[in-house]
Amino acid sequence: MKKRYIVLGCVLCMALLALVWWLVPTHFLGGVTPKDVGKIEIFNGTSGRKYVLSDPEQIAFVVEHIQQVPMKKDYIGLGMGTLFRMQFVNPDGKDMDFFIVNSEDSIRQGMMFYECDGELEQVVEYLEEIEDSLFPEKEDSD
Image 1 (tube, helix red, strand yellow):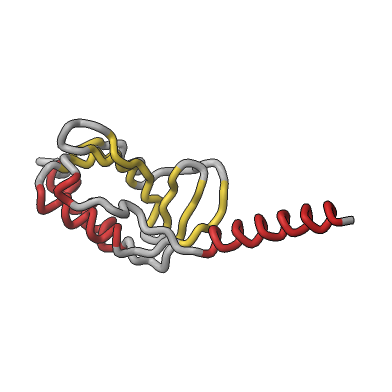
Image 2 (cartoon, helix red, strand yellow):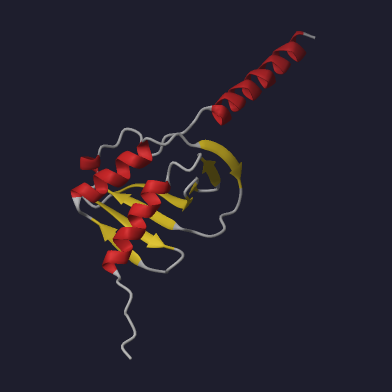
């Protein structure tokens, strides 16, 4: 009988820990300063374009804005679609972190999807502006 209570207690404790883990918000790039990042390799899944951010001001904007957003775990699933695939690399060329910004309110890392209330809008718009400046659309000359 005593073993039964011990097992039940362990199961309840693990369930409680899992619930707390699920409910506690996640902050991406925790413990990383913009100076720790040498470059950000970006792939836009919508346009198919790849580019690299290496300007310290651009890196600081992206890192600081992403760090400020508390992300709630949303669900576990297979990834569908990609807005911005982002690989953070330190100055020595070693990979630091990797995740996908799916939208203004969603990040995917591995099979875990995280959501926020649209606070990623500034980052998405900023990356779109940088991409537009790197790949200007050619105008038809008639």
